Image (tube, rainbow, N blue to C red; front, side):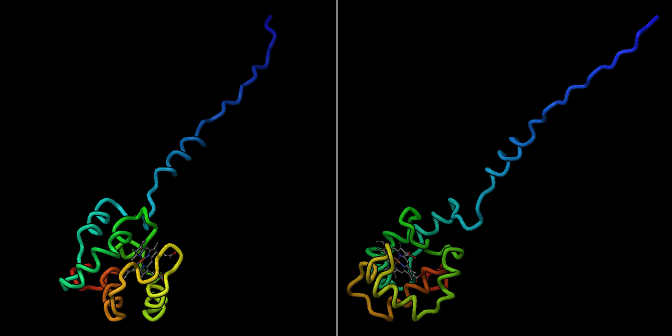
Length: 131
Ligand code: HEC
């Protein structure tokens, strides 16, 4: 005679949660500059030679490296929201400074007209192939 018995099935815990987390951590941010963007920021110069000199000795120091928290030259995603403020406000921020952005961006002999051209160049609007 055989006595029937119940076998209990154990629940197996699945380890899927951890795998998902690892996959999410690998996603890059679209508004983060990549190696090519950094190289571009280092090499771009305004087409006007006199303006390029001023750019190199002032703005480039910060706007050529993301470590400074400054919007990267020629990197459109960093400039989009700023350009929406309009040129008059951007120009006044360059003249008066804004947080870690020093007044006049260390260019004391830059005119308003030159600041405007520098902003257009840095934000990717032309003058030196930043387009
Ligand atoms: C010492 C570093 C430094 C130098 C030099 C510098 N910048 Fe900046 N700049 C910054 C930082 C940091 C910001 C971001 C400020 C913020 O939004 O908090 C910034 C922001 C800006 C903005 C955006 C302002 C806004 O309203 O969003 C413009 C335009 C700009 N810089 C232009 C220039 C120009 C033109 C020069 C050269 C004449 C220059 N900067 C030199 C650090 C610098």
